[in-house]
Amino acid sequence: MKIGIVGSGNVGATAAFAMVMRGVGRQIVMVDLDRKRAQAEADDILHAVPFAQPLQVRAGDYEDLAGAAVVVITAGVRQKPGESRLQLLERNAAVFRDVVPQVLHNAPEAVLVIASNPVDVMTHLAARYARDFGVPSSRVVGTGTTLDTARFRSLLSRYLGVDSHHVHAYVLGEHGDSEVVAWSEVGIGGIPLDEFCILGSQQITEDVRKQIDDEVRHAAYSIIEGKGATYYGIGAAIAQIVNVIVRDQRAILTVCTPMDEVVGVPDVTVALPNVIGGQGVISTCLFELTDEETERLRASAQIVRDALDELGDV
Image 1 (cartoon, rainbow, N blue to C red):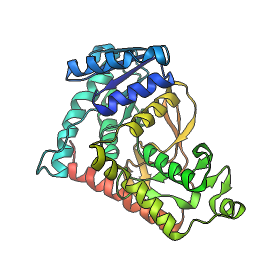
Image 2 (tube, rainbow, N blue to C red):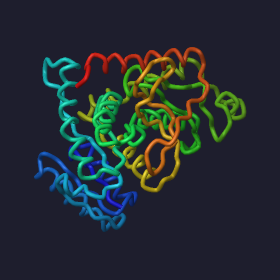
Image 3 (cartoon, rainbow, N blue to C red):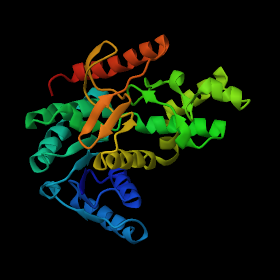
Image 4 (tube, rainbow, N blue to C red):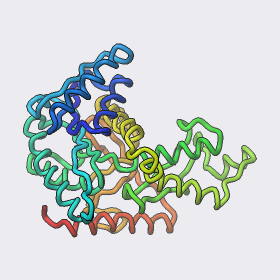
């Protein structure tokens, strides 16, 4: 099964490497404006194949995406000094207006996985451009808060001393400062958090909750301060999303896809727990939140909606 990656920077290359190590698909094609960079990354990753899973990894052009089941888009531009958020969004929208049609012209059946930031807005725009090719919004999937959710689970795992695979917890809304850490739905091995703490003679105080919440919300800032960028976590998240799609696993992931309405905010894209399969998003599983969490999710969705309104019909 062929997988395309458009954008061979740190995120795209790390995602490709993660797929090779996990054995996701059978062929990975890396496309970038900088063909030399794409070729170098593809060659470097290919040399890891003998230590991992049998995959083909190569650089290519858009035409080489033909037949791809999934195409990951990590392409985008960086913010210039003095550039406003709106100006950056407009330039990234221009990139997507060019990239999305070229992808779908060559791989019309592909599920698009969007990893370019701000991912909620870029996923919404990608779905808008894909609509011209008859692609339903359910086949346009943003990485959403999959990484934030993983951060939340890993911090709870470390604090409680439990394997993170048995921690069920979600981060919802915008992939950004307004995201909602949904404490009300945390479960450990099917047991509500408060009950689990009683059974284990443990306690998560409000101070601990605030500390974990802050670490989840601001993790990227501290990583960027220390090393300049984040790419391992999001690369692994992309590999997981693609793996779920190509295997039609029907897993629940906090990806984002355009929704008609989210807690009263119309026509918006934010991360919610979604069932993901071979054709993208199958259904949304928004559980019952507390009143406070619902209001915070509404505020988060409104931030994304406001950004889309500011952009207009780009």
